[in-house]
Image (cartoon, rainbow, N blue to C red; front, side, top):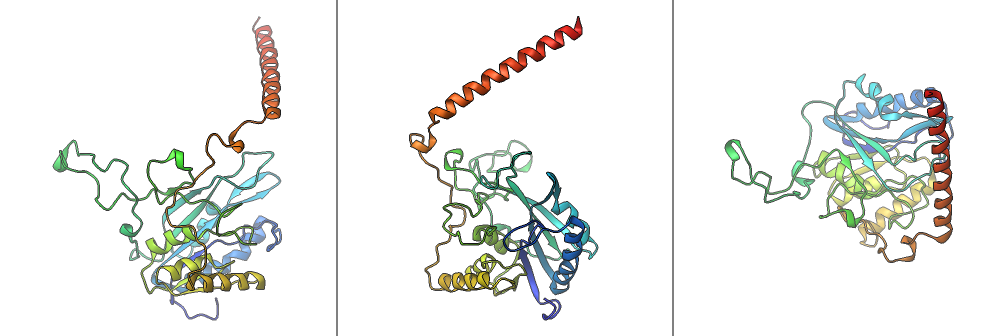
Length: 309
């Protein structure tokens, strides 16, 4: 980033490593992690145009089963450069690592920062369907008139990963992470979905704006930018990810890359499928667990009564 001229980037959209051990990053202490990322944030701010924005997507740092929310810890690093937070978006997804000594984490956060009060926000490009399009106003100047916007409603700051039977319309907020049989899955273990990048590109930049991803991975940000008429740049240390990212961009330009459509609903197996049926051994295990719980509850109740007497 130091090779680039100041104030030449309109949108920085990225998801950095979280300071934990992965195949592309080594474990560091929380203090080391924050000191490592501090100059990177400074360079990001230097590159932003006066009307530029940053979308920084992060999760949690975990040490000895203690969780440290990185968006909270990184907040002062952005504020010391005068950036202003416009939204803290919660991205919920249904699949990920299974925790053993705490609840399994199923959300990450995306911080949207701007360099000034003069910034891009294309609300109409990311509106979602109204839940009640025929609803009428019940008071004020709009009493008896349609109360909503005909183009749709303003998206919420919680983007959900829901299955089709829970929905009554295909809302743009529904964005699964890239796991399992996701059509975009590559060898990268923490790949950003193109759909998530698209929402940010559409909402926080204009056609022709320059989009930068300093942790480019396998090129999801670049694909989203190019798809919507924004020139893009990316940096990546691992050559195999660089090669994969370049291949994906070229395949997208050639019309061959499989990308999950923006706003597509998430499907699930039918209720009659074998994968939805509770196995017999699980039924037995649940029955045994229920019996054990009842016994413990009875013993606890008896001890409570004894103490009261």
